Image 1 (spheres, rainbow, N blue to C red):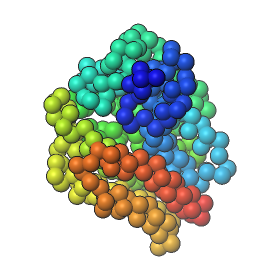
Image 2: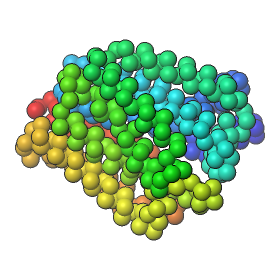
Image 3: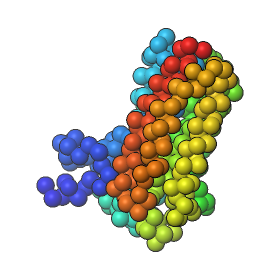
Length: 305
């Protein structure tokens, strides 16, 4: 039992499921972060927002399900790829030293095979989309491939993550409408700022270890001003979303649909303790609920525009 405990990293969300898996399968589950579904939720939400804002959440509910499956598979694939690239850095950070590749429980060749299998699931999702949406999805591959290297060359890898984790917004809109719109662009821009904000919160957990390992992050760049910086990014996100809603439905009532989301983001910033890793992790995870609030706002505006 002690060995099983040591295999599960500190921020695992589903320890029970991970422990019940056969020992041979457990490292693959952990490598894809299936024990931490928060990442899949965060990848899923921007696509769901776009579908809802385009008015397709009811008529094309199947798209919501396909995007959910794609988010799980491609987030898992992204985590495997990230760990392949970062396996040496992960050995230097306390929170990541137990990851399957960094600890040696999975070999490099097996990790590449697992990555390929997850990408095949993503391919199944891709062929469900129309041509415009499928091409938009494929256009993300370069940004995804470059992401693990950003922490080595820029203090703002969270901005690059924003480009990647928000990309589904660029796919969800044409999946419903067959084309693109400035509304979609503003939704995407707002999601980028949202991602920068919540991933800066996440990065607060690793500030000391990242400094020792030479890993750059927005949390390190902002330092003591992290709370204010996160507040600014969340404010920019809300500004973009207000503009998107106004373009689609130029009425105050549509804008007010964002009020619950705004209050939730304000709660995250107001009570954030930047020197408390447990608090940072809790507020980062709260963005799963924030995504739901934004989805409901998009659903209301999209259905009544």
